[in-house]
Amino acid sequence: MKSLISNPDKFFENIANKSANLKVFMLAILFNSMAISLNSLLFIVYIPSSSQAGYFYLISMFIVLFGIFFIYLLILCIVIAGVSHIVLTKLMGGVGTFKKRW
Image (cartoon, rainbow, N blue to C red):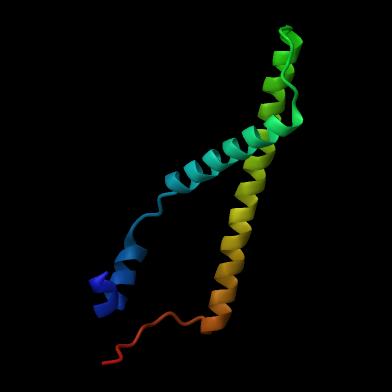
């Protein structure tokens, strides 16, 4: 944090030179998709009877909901990142330099 305040140019240059790691991003989307799917499933689906068809219905409904919410969250995150990038670029005039104030 000290280097961010004292020398922001060097701090952001180091960050820009690092490779992007999307594992945490994808894990967060996977976890959130699973949580939303389970939550939705608890409100939609009844407790199945002991028949195989009831369990198949339950599992297939979870897979469908998981896929829908995964794609939805992925698109939502990409749109938010894109809009944020466009807005910040327009706001800053496309210039990203920092000047020391002291």
